[in-house]
Length: 201
Image 1 (cartoon, rainbow, N blue to C red):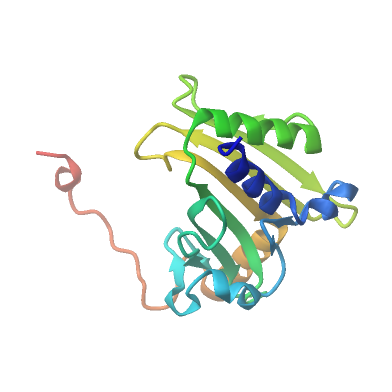
Image 2 (tube, helix red, strand yellow):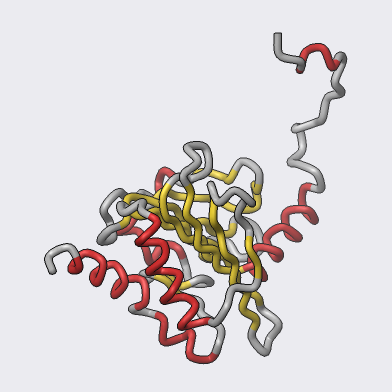
């Protein structure tokens, strides 16, 4: 029975704010609500260490402190830095329990709450198993939810969740492109002189 307590605690935290899902459009997970000012969650992370996301510079990201949430070993909060500066756009959570059994329990809860997933994102060999749910409200806003288990050391090993407000993310991207195009001024592109440079030796 002692083993069940941590799992029940984790599930209680994850679904504590799921009442908003009653209308088929969940926006919150583990106490984090997409679209809200990220500063509200300063106790969970070190805001002064936020950095732009390397492949999505229209977002900034800050790491969640280890053990800031029960059963969670880490993760990140990504927020807008262009049109809706400081608005929470994405939540990533990684769990202490990396087992497939924990993943299966979460999957069952998700399927019970949201129905069958919309798409399978994992690989054919099941080294990475990832399921995607998509939600849309009557305003046309879209949120995605990805539940993943991985035994690949290079692909976020263990159990993780990623929840993204896609509409807010698209707005940040469009704002960035309007301001900077392919990149900020001064970040000019250079041409490759020889492909030989990029062939391992």
